[in-house]
Length: 206
Image 1 (tube, helix red, strand yellow):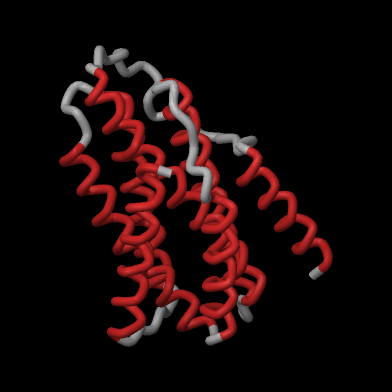
Image 2: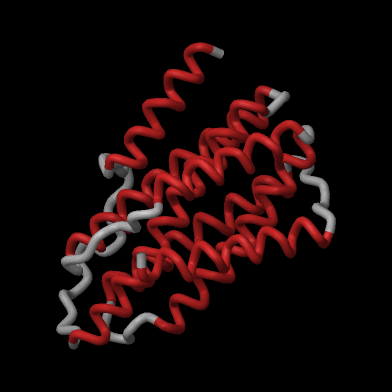
């Protein structure tokens, strides 16, 4: 447990300090640089900032859920998904730098809130823990599909990143379902959706 706490603390520092790294190739590598007008650049940066904050939240959620998971196999699955989410964090941060923009100033608050939610999900047992993953990834997949519709058509780099992230999120949700996820009550799902909307609205500008 002490080792897990140390690893978790290290991951939190990497998440909030902007030093996340990716073992996989950057999805936007090889994509042509787009000539975006100022409005398109602001839109792309706002959407990628939202995606970066979503990955900050994912790191906190998966870390807390891994700590409270009761079955070793469940903890392993969550840890594996968290590693891929850290790659998403690195990708979105790199894209924001390419767009000459910044990450959200509210990320520490979102990290703390998401960590608390992850602890609550994990305390409910592994079926609830996995059900939370399924619902989270379902909503994230919808959210990323919406971003694909909104991103400037010429922004090939951002679109490649979002497409790769969406594929991973769908796989994480399928993993949790196959591992025996339960079903979250409707009020919980609606509350999660409301929280996601609040995060999206905040991170786009702040």
